[in-house]
Image 1: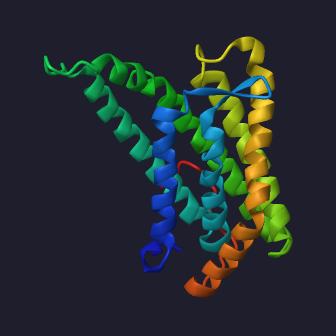
Image 2: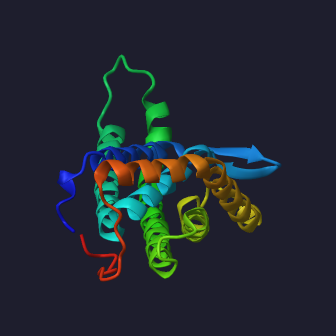
Length: 224
């Protein structure tokens, strides 16, 4: 199925994914204390990327979700190029806050490079597990499928991003603890939102008249 444009709400989910992906670029480097452990502030909103991914995969299938992942990658790279340009371009003599801009935006290349790879790896893992489980369970146990796929995706994403994306921003002594706590926090968001996610998925299936089972899907993550 390649004609995704015929659906009413596919583009809505695409925009939500890109919104949360772009918001994470300049903000995920800010560390906050949670039970004495430093975590990225993005734990509060990053999980919605995976909720959107669950909806895309559950309703429209793995291929549709994979395309959204790639659009997000392209958007993040383009945003980073603009951030680099803004940080580099000489300010006006009257502009006295240029250092503040540079402090925030200068970390973007590191964050977006590893953040984008982390989102890609985590998202693809999430979507693959969900699509496979949907076929294996013949569409049953939707809530369980959402949670299990999120656990896989969030752990992959968090471990990679905290290890490489936050290098130099996070003390190595807190690394394992931070990865574990951040993963749990993100998964809890999915669990709390689960009733809403399930109802939204069923509403989308009814609205779009589609419920894809990936029985013959090419799961190559590099295919657009």
